[in-house]
Length: 445
Image (tube, rainbow, N blue to C red):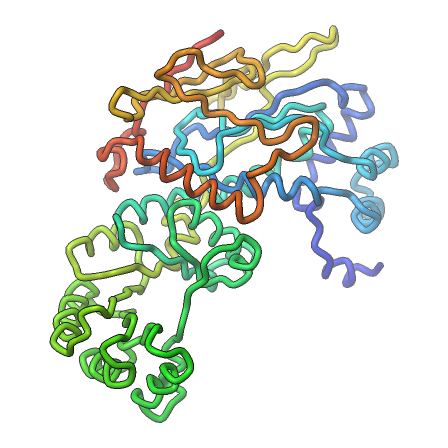
């Protein structure tokens, strides 16, 4: 296969950093590759101004495990490039993850130091997953965290994801999924809708109006195709005239009009008054145009029915990554005994040992403390009634557990997020800068 042919074939296994394979080669040579190890995913701090994060991408990680394979094309690329030796190529040809993964359920909120995912396997099996796990969790969690802030600011009004054109084509699919985990009601991205069973939305852009000789004929064409259960974009020319023409074309049963420019709060009030005066009291107002959580919050008193959000949600609204890391925290030593290990680097230290986590909830159902438990065994559950265990089994003996992938996984994650965020106090959901919503306490067992 030529280099140009290889370039057209996506490879999940090669979505990784070279040093994962060079570490593997050296470990295979010195005999440490088979040592049992525990890797942990966590973030040292939240992005500036954030009070909590949202775990997202877990389902995509689990889906990726089944296709994380080194087939002939991948092995030939590695051989031709002299990247690893024959012993390593032989190991990669037979690579299958056979270990265990525990972690926070997708949709759960998290804080600095939260042990979000724990991977236990041989060094060889576990180290190869580092880049894959981090690239998915860091991006998806950043999007879901931003989406959560937006849906919190929107209250009961739906947020709709429209950011596909502002992201890489595959990132757009991941972003749509993560936005729904964070509370969004739908997406404009059809592939995300197909793959994950998401509600898809969208009607027309300004180009459709500009295509026609005039605005009335554009509206008439759209209504002829979709009936009055559609949304007409009314700000291509004069907004007030656009609203009048929209109702003339569709009647007072028109589902919605969309505003994509101007002072949205002021314009929405004017449009609401105009719609009511025309007898279209049931026609909703959708707003878009570079919205983020702060703009959504500023429209809380405006007569807006839903928000279309693009650039800000797919870029994490200023925080495009969560700064998650994947660190070795426990390993089997030369005597066959598991022992904690940790970094001591300045500003990049880690806490050794396998960990579990629980959240303390008071009698009113409010989260008051994150409890990180060092020395906990796999499957640890808290004995105290006030503590809610946060780790769930995701992979056991290499087998992905049911309920976390596909459309069911997204539905389950979105519900988990609604429940988890509802435990936080209203203070925790404020958009202003501040400390993490709840403190984190470390204990040992």
